[in-house]
Length: 390
Ligand SMILES: C=CC1=C(C)c2cc3[nH]c(cc4nc(cc5[nH]c(cc1n2)c(C)c5CCC(=O)O)C(CCC(=O)O)=C4C)c(C)c3C=C
Ligand SMILES: [Fe+2]
Ligand SMILES: [Fe+2]
Image 1 (spheres, protein in one colour):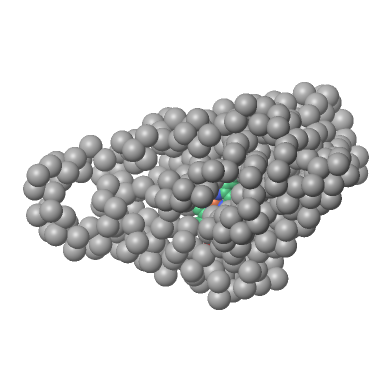
Image 2 (tube, rainbow, N blue to C red):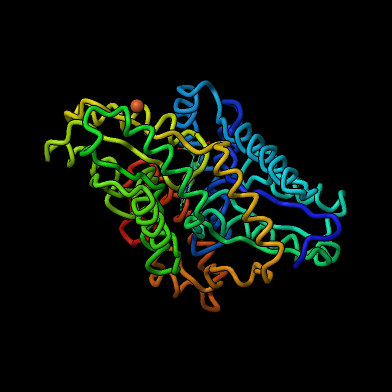
C-alpha cells in the first residue's frame, strides 16, 4: 500500500499495572489469555486466572512496590508513540500513532475504537516486541483478528502487520550504542562478558507450537554481537520463568552463578526482549539478579538501559513504518500463530475426556480439576505437574 488518506500506526505492547491496586486485575487479564496458559478445557481458563491472580498478586505487588508502586510501561510507551509521531512528521508523514496494550490501559480495544473514530484508512500494526512470540505479539494479533472479524468497518481499513523487526539496522545500532557506553566504564572493557537476558517462554511453545521466538532471540543476539564488533565473550540466558513447566534454558538465575564459578568478576547484562524499562529490568535484573551476582562473587554488575526513546531507535521505527506502507501488506493470517489444534501443554491424557462423553466428564472433572489446580499452585509440584499439564 502507498501512503494516502488518513494513515495510522498502532503500537502494541503488553501493559502493566499503574498502581498497586491494578496488580490483581492485571494478572487476571494476563492469565485469562489462552496464549499465556492453554488448558484442555476453555471453562478452566477464567477460574484458573482468578486463582492464580489471587494467589500471586501480593508477591507481585511487593515487586511493583520496590519500583515505586507501579509499572512505568504506559508512560514510556506513550513517550515512544509521541516521539515516533514527531519523527514521522519530520519525514513529511502526517501519521497518527496509537497505543494498544494487551492486559492493561490503554487496552487494544480502546485504541481500535479511536482508530475507527478517526476514520483511519491505512494502518501499520507495529508490536513493540523486537522478536515474535505467540505469547506476546501473537496474542495481540489474535485480539485484533477477532475485532476485525466482528466489524465490517474495520475490514475496510487497508492494514499491514510488522511481525518482528529484531534485525533492523537502526535497532541494532541503538542497542550497540547503549552496550558500548556501558562497556566503556567497565574495569576491564576488553574482556567483560556480555550477558543477554531474554524473557523466557515455556519450551513447549517453541518445540510443539512452533513459536519462532527462540530462533529470533538467537538471531537478534548474533546480530547485535556482529554489529558491536568487539572481542568480548557473550552468553544468552532466559529470565522470568513462572510456574513449574520447563522454560527455555539456560535460566538466567543459573547462568549467573555459573559464570561466577568460572571466575567472572564483572558482567554487563543486556535485556533484549523488551524495548522499555519495566518490572523485569528494574526489579528482576537490577535488584534480584544483582544481588544473586554479588552473592556469587561477581563484584561489578552493569546493566544496559532499555532503548525507551533512544533517537536512533525511534528514527528506525519511523523508517520501518514508511517502508511498510510501500511494501505488500502482511495480514493477521500470514503471521505465525498456532493452529486451533495446537497443544500448548501435553494433554494426550486428557483426550479421552474430549469424546462424546465430554460433558459428563467435564462435570466430574470440574471439582477434581480445581482441587488439582489449587494443590499445584500451592505446592508447585501437584498432580497437574505430574500429568504434564503445568
Ligand atoms: C517479550 C517479552 C515477554 C514474553 C515472551 C512474555 C511471556 C510470558 N510472560 C508470562 C507471565 C508474566 N508476565 C508478566 C509480566 C511481563 N511480561 C513481559 C514480557 C514478556 N512476557 C513484561 C514486559 C512484563 C511486565 C509488565 C510491567 O508491568 O512492566 C507477569 C506479571 C509480573 C509478575 O507478577 O511477575 C507474568 C505473570 C508468561 C506465562 C509468558 C509466556 C508464556
Ligand atoms: Fe511476561
Ligand atoms: Fe555501569
